[in-house]
Amino acid sequence: MLDSISLLTKLKSLDLLANASPWWWERALSFDVVIGAILTQNTKWENVERSLENLRTAGILVCTNSSRGESSEQSLQNLANCNSIESFIIPSGFYRQKSTRILALARDILAEFGSFERFGLEVSREWLLARKGIGFESADSILNYACGRAIMVVDSYSARLLGALGREMESYEDIQQWFMNLTTRDLAGLYGDLAYSEIGLAQIYARYHGKIVEFSKRKLPIQRLLDVDFGSFDK
Image (cartoon, rainbow, N blue to C red; front, side, top):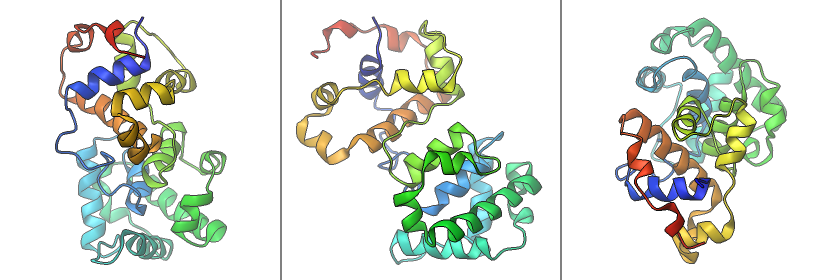
């Protein structure tokens, strides 16, 4: 029967992330992800990219030759001191609401943690979910792609893919649990012991989600995932 490691094995064989960043999300492990996770709600990623570029051009989001950590700290401070970013994020839609929520989140991060670095190390899922406008998908995107936590993001692509494979699930938690049902033995067998230890579970989850999104966006036939002897995988 189809399980998560079998699906990951087939998706990996399709080489969907050949030209992608190591974590799939561009500028992963930076404060940019926190902003992107909110901007991407109810819009296409292409619109988010335009908004992020507007913020960079305005000098609010900082991309310097220094470390990504320093850039993130500067970006966090800049946003916390802004009165509004509405005019910069119009492409993402709901710009008044998103501006308010992003600025409130930046201020909450500084008030609670003092820095983006400490936020990344200490923030909990519960703390994020308590913030206005952050649901399960946004919280898990921040935890995985910004903080490097071993949690997998699931979204509408994930749910539709499971449905097409005959696995109908309604709740976010059930879908997430199905995808995260991966054992250390299975993953070491798929990636090799050394590669698995170097990549780490958080990055595997990040790329697994990326593979699902890329498979879905390319509108590849579901048969590409069915025409495989899943039972042949040596567990």
